[in-house]
Every structure is written in structure tokens, then in C-alpha cells.
Image 1 (cartoon, rainbow, N blue to C red):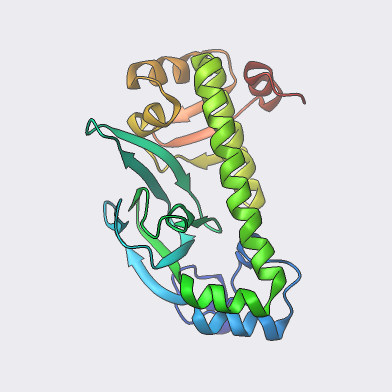
Image 2 (tube, rainbow, N blue to C red; image 1 turned 60 degrees about the horizontal axis):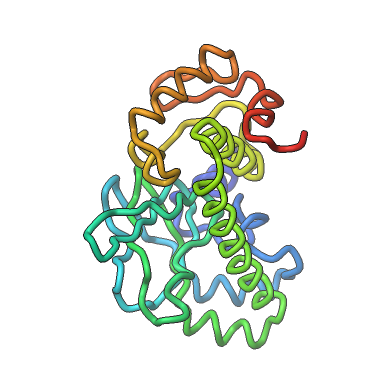
Length: 245
């Protein structure tokens, strides 16, 4: 492998341009040309490194930037008026977070690293200015925000109406699709989040999550070894989740 190829494949290398990043097809508009990507590259800060448990931003903190995950994983959670934590999302490489702070100029959630994580920071004031010059970029971020709203609505429906088995099956199917989008295996992957976090996100107890994992394993839908999950029967999982094949 050449030195340049090694640099481009390394998700922690802060010197990689947006055009060379292996995740650009996920987090950038496909319509941006080389010159436009260069303009975006000028405002993106790529050197932010987080260790497990480090905070990227805090609930009610002043909103300054949105972030793109380059490596690792991020958990976002909200502390309600009763002091209870509610996990609201997990973010994988290529995905954008922090848009919850745009409306009120303060972050609505806290974001913490689930393992060693690298992110690109995009100062929002500069992004706004650049978006006025590049309509494709503006529409791309509108789509990101629209997708987040849609995902929130789906999650509310999932928690309010579906059984524990349906919730966990849907969660695993979603993770599979997100890994496949990054051109990684959609059938075997690691879960960076804990069983407790999964339960919190899905509105289930950790005991219920563990029981459902065990049931899926006995039914030969998945194989589980610690944080490693292998989907053995995707059609079976979709049947459980009541998702059309």
C-alpha cells in the first residue's frame, strides 16, 4: 500500500481532504464538484479526537458547530426535567450530528463518544455562509434535518406500538443498513453501545434486551458474542419486525 493510499484510508488522519475521505459519499452532496468540495474543506476542522466517555457537546451548551463522525461512534442523550437520561440516537461514521442546536442556538442533547472516535467539526456560521453560495450544500443539510425528523417519528411509533422483539429486530436491521451504506458488512458488525443504552433507546429494560437477544439467538436469527453480532437470517428478522422483504 502506498503512503498516500494509507493516509486516505485512515479515518484519524486530520490531513485528509473532504474529497479524499472514504466517507464523502455519505456525508457530502454527490453533486458537489471538486472546486466546491475545496471550499467546504477550508472550513472543516478535522482534528477532533475523543476517547470513550469524552463529551463532544453538552445539553444547553451554546450551539456553534455541527459534526461529522469519521471513526468510532457517538451516543446522544437528553436529560429530562426529572433528571432521567433518555438516549435519542447513535451516530456512526459518515453521519452528521448537532443539528438539534440550530433552532434554539443551544444543543438540545449531550453527545459522548462510545469508543475512540474522530469527528470533523463544521462551524455553523461558516456553513451558513457557504450554503448561500452552494445551493446543493444547503439542500443536503435540509435533507439531513428532514431525515432526523422522520427517524424521530419512526422511533416514537416503534416505542409506542411495537413489542420488544419488533423493536430490537428493527434496531438491528437499521444498524445493518447503515453499515452497508458505508460499504462494510451488513451481516456482521460490532455494537459500540451497551445493552443498557440499547434498552434506554428502545424503551426497554436491560433484562428485556438480554432476553430478546437470547431468543433471537435460539431461533437462529442472529449469533451474538459480546458486542459482536452476526445476522444469520435477515428475512426472519424482517418478519419479526413486520418489515416487507
